[in-house]
Every structure is written in C-alpha cells, then in structure tokens.
Amino acid sequence: MPSDTPLLKVDELSSHYGPIQALFGVSLEVKQGELVAIVGANGAGKTTLLHTLSGVQKASGGQVFLDTREITKQKPHKIVAAGVCHVPEGRQVFAPLSVDDNLRLGAYALRKEKEWVEQELDNIYTLFPILNEKSAQSAGTLSGGQQQMLAIGRALLGRPRLLLLDEPSMGLAPLLVEEIFRVIQSLNDQGVTILLVEQNARAALGIANRGYVLETGKVVLSAGADELLKDEAVRRAYLGY
Image (cartoon, rainbow, N blue to C red):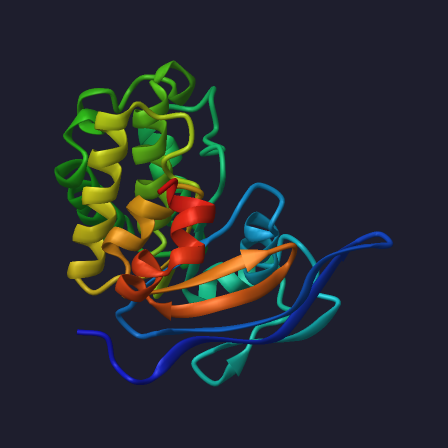
C-alpha cells in the first residue's frame, strides 16, 4: 500500500521554451508506492513536465524534491543516479543496437558489477519473454509494442525509486495497450512508485491511485482516480461520455 510520505514533491514548477512559458506553477506529490496519473489533452504540458522532472528540460521556477533532497537543477545523469528513471514518449530506443545492449545501457549509471547486471537482465527477460527471444536483434526491428517493453525494461535496469512513464500506449493496438497497462499495474503492485502521463485517461485512471488534470501548463484538478473517473467535466473532456 502507498505510504503517507511523499517520494516526489513538486512545488510551483515553471518551465519555458525561450520566451514561451509551458508550465505555470505546477504543484503535485507522489507518495512512496503510489501510481499517480497525469491526464490532459495534447499540448497541455504533460511531456514538458516529465522532461523538467528528469532534468532534460530546465526549470525556470519552483522546486522538485526527491524525498527531502532538492533535484531541481541537477543534471539528468545525476537525477537518474538518484533513482528517477524516465521512459520517454515514442520509446526512444537505440535502433541500431541490439535489444540486449539497449537494456544494459539502463544500468550504466549504477556502475554495478557484472553479476548484478546479469541477474537484473534475467528479471527483465522473465517480465518480457519476447525480448528474450529477440535479445540479439537490433531494437529498430521490433514492433511498437515490443519497443515499448524494451524502453520500460531499460528504465527498470536503473532500479528506479520513481518511474516516469510518458504516453506508453501511444501508437499501440488495443490488445497491446491492455498488455502494457497490465505490466504497469504489476510493477506498481510490486512496489515501484510510478508517475504516469497518458492521453488515454480512462486506462490511466483505471489503474492509478490518484490523478491530476493538466491544462495549458496548469494543474486544474486533482483527486482520487475513482473520483476523477466519475467527475462530469473529466468524463466529458477526456473520457468521451
């Protein structure tokens, strides 16, 4: 069960692309063991938020804390080493490299001994048997769903304290979407804390503990996932009924 202690605390976070402001004082929390969903339309700032949390995009205001440690201005590799692992929108696998090499890159920042890496690889191949079958193939030859599994597996090799997932269902067939969300829920059941950005609001809120609704770079609503699923405005805007 989620604890009452925030693992991630975001306080009045802002971010700009040159003169264009993309985030406007976003505040949220993710407690240890929670699965928190962020939903919103295209252009709401969901991806920018995750990029800013992982250090890829610079914050122009506000603070980000992991436990009580501020990570707002840390370099991305330092944030990864602190335990924040990001599965980006569009998978972003290294297409020419093998599946196995892509996965091994996920453990690079940890500088762990070979035996540890091999054991973690075995765990990922157990979670995603298809990746084991295709471990020697180049990542670019995989289907979209298999690449999404690879991207998640690569992040898990970083032993995340907080897993950031950006639009994991994008471009996938409905059956693959169900499989990916089953895996996400299973990871959370095993204790992985997850912040999930997803345009498929129904699927995201269906497995989340809580949710935030983001519009034009601002949090406009936050509540328990069940409450958001029943909210008339959320249903009309994001659920299609």
